[in-house]
Length: 326
Ligand code: KG4
Ligand code: ZN
Image 1 (tube, rainbow, N blue to C red):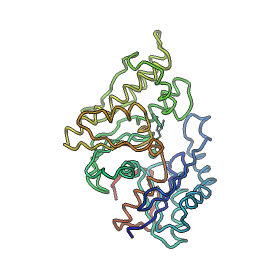
Image 2 (cartoon, rainbow, N blue to C red; image 1 turned 180 degrees about the vertical axis):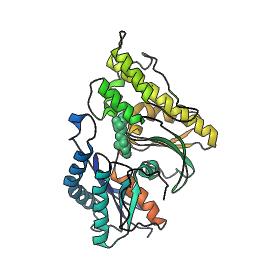
Image 3 (cartoon, rainbow, N blue to C red; image 1 turned 90 degrees about the vertical axis):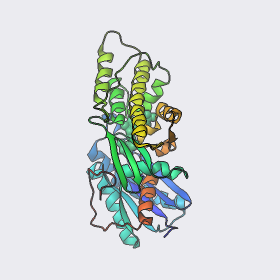
Image 4 (cartoon, protein in one colour; image 1 turned 45 degrees about the horizontal axis):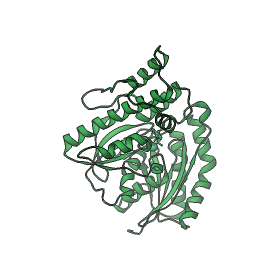
């Protein structure tokens, strides 16, 4: 079983992705990003589910072909959290393949996939570590004690960090997803141009909705700075807020290994600044493995399968699901 090659399938949002991961590492990683949502400036759930139905076969076939694998030893598919109709496509497809091939199946928690993705790329990252998962739907800092054992230390009480990026992009009349656009725009701006607030929900949690409102007020106000300055100043505030909590958690737990993951982990300022934090050993995945991908699902599934876990075909989609929750 140590040689197990796992097919991982991801369809929880707007990426249709499949990958094969084995003991040698990532054998293939195929991602199709849906374009249908761009004109709506956000993901439309029903359109996402339909687009997954159209692409899932081709994406999975490409992942198997690129890996040179006809029949994997097991299948792992995202079972949640995410858009229920979208999750159901990949989950049902994955279960059917496992049934047809007669191989074990495992439903994977999407957040656990992100959380463990730095482990996939670093041989030296060991438990326990702090995991900052920052995506379009989630912003949570976990203490990862062991495989499947994750304690939430801080989470957002309102918007996720990626959601704040997407909303600020909308305020500035840019496209979707906003993260990469604002990141690029910020390169030409002054991060000290506007003193946006660094909100704290309370002693530990994150809050980004007030920051987004401050950006809107500034943009509608009299002394409006350039889009690049707004983007750079907003980005500086987001990164300050995130890193403030990381330092707090390192202090609180005595754990100095910090693993960054989720779509916002692709952010250039966050990547640079977390690696410069004093007293922190930062682990940051490749940019392309921060946003949704199949390799993270295959990898998380593989670790659990190697630990002897399996799910029956009755395992159903879960729109809400904490990582580590049975
Ligand atoms: O993990 P992900 O692909 O999907 C979810 O599980 O949500 O994350 C997508 C989020 C979007 O909100 C997108 O704007 C943000 O990640 N994002 C970024 C960057 N690239 C993607 N945010 C800031 N800077 C980036 N470079
Ligand atoms: Zn994600």
